[in-house]
Length: 246
Image (tube, rainbow, N blue to C red; front, side):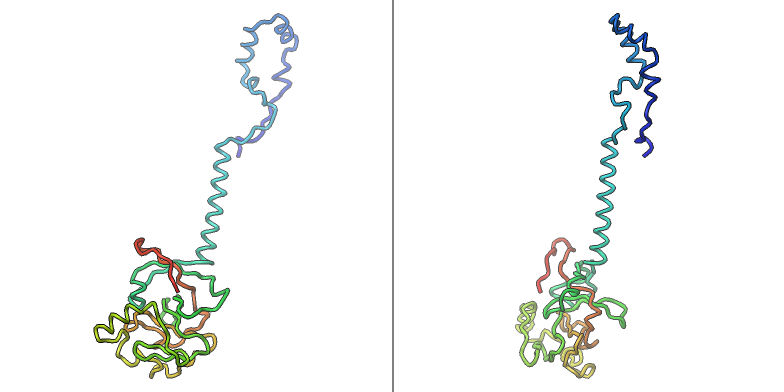
């Protein structure tokens, strides 16, 4: 900054103008003349007039604020675009665990470290739809998946789904299935996707709202490379703020 430059004064002009008069003033001990010289010289009262001026405290604080904001901006960029992203749940396909218009945070780096696991809620891109879906991982590569009513079989064994236990019990108590009765929308394999074996590099996914979810029963297996990340946090509405269990 311009005002911080060292405009060093001409010391010979300031301090050595009349050495004889100065010596006489000192010898005669004339305080009035000393006072006049002191008050009339704008620089003589500055003991460090010959030294570089130090930056002001306000200038230092501004510099520190600029540095802090720059670092914060960089962190936001890294976190927002490389590590996590906010998403909005669109539609009822994940009820009763996720609701329409809820805001979630998606972990984008997790699957760069390891493969998805069963039960995890993921966000992935569907090119044919031109949008992103949120579903739950059910079948992993190399597994055989079969869906009959409210029961899912993985390699011939029933899958326990604690995240839908209450929903199943409520529907069964009313004498109905939680899942849809439409064969091509409820069961799997079906006429749309007759092969229940999950290929390598693919996943079988389903929505928690089984009777109202467009998932692998309709759109087929999901390539792992289309996964954006794992849903880890609900942050809006505030009353529903919570970490997502998988």
